[in-house]
Length: 156
Image (cartoon, rainbow, N blue to C red; front, top):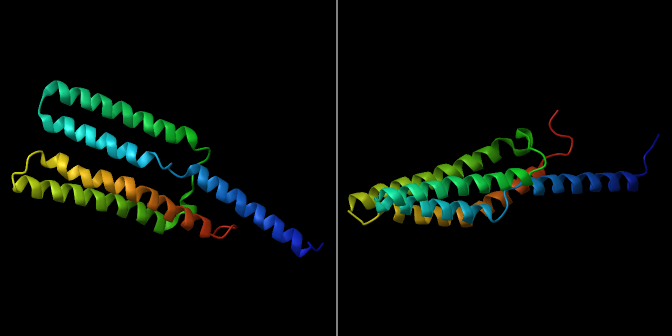
């Protein structure tokens, strides 16, 4: 039985649209990145005060805020993205993004501490929070393109 080319094209377009819908549903939303960056600033700022009760309140707010942000993202996701859809390049991009921001924050923090800057950890986390806010959506855009570029049939 032969399938007319137009029917095959329509079926393929429908499959691509559904895959894009699944990918878009499971990407981290835009608001996630500044929320995490803001929580980091709050937490590190609280720790830098050196005041016990401020550190305790900052820790509680950070923990509850992080839990709420993660819960909101997990509840939004309807399915889980498989590794073969993300691929080694996608995992590498995620790990590279995290490692780059970590190296930036730790390196800058040590440098500022060596220079006897006031609140070195807080000053060092500012570019990390900005990196999350600006780079996070770019990472998601890259991952979306990567996932949508995979063949529909997968690797066999």
